[in-house]
Image (cartoon, rainbow, N blue to C red):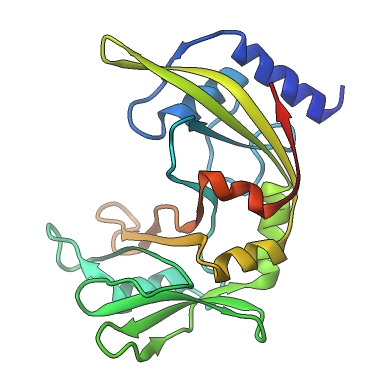
Length: 248
């Protein structure tokens, strides 16, 4: 049996279960629940989740952002440490260490720490997507030395998102506990770097920096990437792919 047929069969098995209890509270509960039932082991690897397919799940009524992939900047060396030490803000409970949590787009400036504005820079000539740090008042560029090469982005898109199973679920509450019925799915295939870059330029892809510092143990003081990466509103995910197929 081919992987596509197998992944459809596995989805339909879960669908036929009807409503199932959430495996975890909060927003990540839906994804964890479906992955538990379909047999995915939770991980942060760059590999697809199961049988060559990346799996994303969402509540039918949701209009939130979904993570396409997480990846630390690939230039320069020790990029996370550089960003955090130069532009991060101290932890309230441990002022000697920094954290840097902010979201940005290529289409507009954000505000951070009352001092900086962050904005993605898609430099098509240099073939890089850079993290631009600007003065919050004048919008003068302070730094754009950190980012991703097109080669890096293209490889992870091809590797992580080549095949995507996108699952929808109804939900209901029973005595305060969330239950899901995974009732619909779509298979998306053939993403492209060109489409990804166009979506960045249009402001449809958001980039999150999620860098902290280890506050104990052997790595004390070193940067800790909590999942910096690229995200998109659920309803726009189809714009990244050439083809899709609905599964009932």
